[in-house]
Amino acid sequence: MITSSNLSLTLLLFLFFFFSRCHSILDPLDFLALQSIRKSMSDLPGSTFFSAWDFTSDPCNFPGVYCLGDKVTALNLGDPRAGSPGLSGRLDPALGDLSALTELSLVPGRVTGPLPETLTRLTDLRFLAASKNFLTGRIPDAIASLRQLRTVDLSYNQLSGQIPPSIGRIPSLSNLILCHNRFTGPVPDLSSTSLVRLDLKHNDLSGWLSPLPPSLQYLSLSSNRLTGWVDRVLTRLGRLSYLDLSMNRFTGLIPGTLFSFPMSSLQLQRNLFVGPVHPVDQVSIRTVDLSYNRLSGQISPMFVSVENLYLNNNRFTGQVPGSFVDRLISAGIQILYLQHNFLTGIAINPTAEIPLSSSLCLQYNCMAPPVQTPSCPVKAGKVKTRPVTQCGMLGNSGD
Image: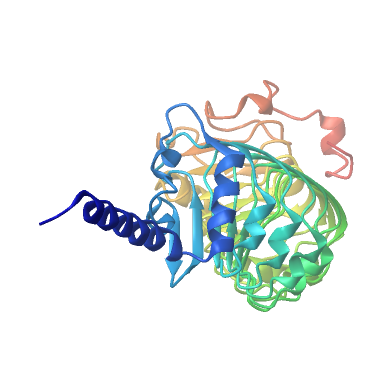
């Protein structure tokens, strides 16, 4: 016979084992850390990420929480599906109490405030990503203590100050993505031989470029205020598949060996590069943009295999190579922008039909364009030919 007292005892024992099971699965420090993180952040309208964070159940079953044993090893804050609303709030210092964390990510949203200094306690952290939020302040100088870091992606925030010099000495670092922030000062010395991707575009970085590791395959430093000669830096980067140094103040010669690297895109426009350009072999890069520099001499026929070639707004002289014409008419060249130079001719039949898929612009050279070029960009202007007085100087005057 089951008495009321026995039933009460059975219920109490059930509740005891239920709650002890729920709360003993996770290390107490990790449990408290998750509670603090939850209190510091909220779902944006339309997001339901935190709706399942019910602390009467096992936190290891929460969305975005991954455990090994009694420790949290990965924390992905927010719904990762493209277009899903993100989170608001701040990154709580309690993140640093998740001592076994190897991965920390935050989906795009409206999270504000600084990166907690306590993150530098996560010595097992390998992956840190919090792009497209509103984070402010500096990257903690002690980030170099995270010796296991492989990827740091803090792009599209409002972070400022100098990039910590020590970050370049993290031996396992392979991806450093800090673009679209407000960083100032120089590009730090980067000695990690594991570094494959470096993206620092759209900041306010300045100064000369230090040597970079030859392991790099992707390099983007565009839209900064970097200066100086880069020929010796670039010639060491023989594994590059993408290079963008555009919209800086780099000067000096462009090394001919650069064009033989296995790249798909080379962006050097809007700098102060000077002198002739002599690729050592036929260029197989799909897109080459050398526009808005101070390059001179004749156009090399080695560029004939480039699909999108921007040489406009320089000081090139002489004839356009005849091989360019053949490739253009056969639709091998999609974009050939030669406007605003000092070119004197192009051997093309005035009745030739340029394919609709191709764009040619010859505006404002030392010749009248022999064919109609309606595909010129608006910035090329309406004046078709340079003044004779400028052409007599063979491109020595500024443009």
